Length: 330
Image 1 (cartoon, rainbow, N blue to C red):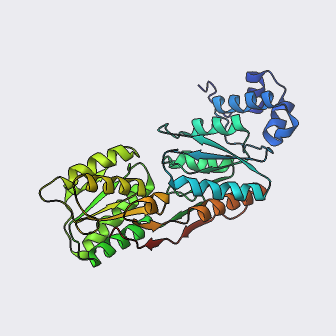
Image 2: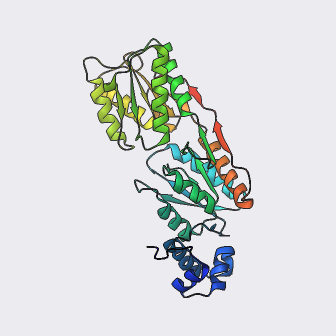
Image 3: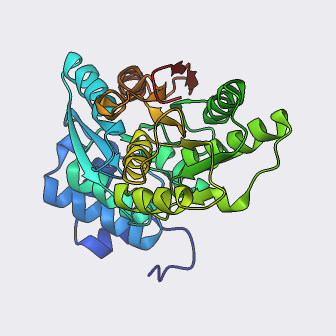
């Protein structure tokens, strides 16, 4: 807790840590001139006292990656792109799985300090805009895939709203109007935006959405998607097509349909998202939206290293194109 009522000074930090003002100043302005334990103690004292706006300076050649979920194959090519770009410029990456942990400022700042990373790429959603921009002011930062659309922090991603709307348009063009949607957790931007695109596509086609056919899964889970798909397809009035916001969910739909004796695409059309290996391993092969995961990760890392080398560089927000890959499931 901050016991100081006025502005925190270097003397306050020196008193709290037992180091001299000169050592505190060197830690803030030139990390390499002090020992790691000394630096870490000073940085934590700064945050505890409320003096936590100084940039974090590391020269470790390490990049921190915040990864929300190790079960989602979408991240495989994305991380490969980051890794190749990092290796090209002499950097190494440290991956930290965030899981369901709230991405607070102090949680992330502690990870940065502990790892001595020079910059950070977050693949997870940082919904707290104040925390996100505070981090941006302290350390080079790029959002990748997930991004906060209320923030000016740099990102590389896709237009999920447009992509989802195009999927619905394609389904309707195949003569199917009874369309269900299986979606991921709404704490993620991709899930919120794909849901919005789904609604826009239905509206454009003059289709009234069936609330019982729009499912938001509470977590990224194949088993949960399989259970939901089985329920949807067991109804007397069942969907003619299911759009899934992930190939993993779409694979679960294919399995549920087979268990119930339904033929794809004759009885049910299925479309996934991401164009992962799952989409071509399914039988029949799955129509899906191809994201440029590798390019997304590579560009994000290149942007981050640009920031590390020049903190005054103009922030960029980049949207990459997607492609609907037509296969046999629709």
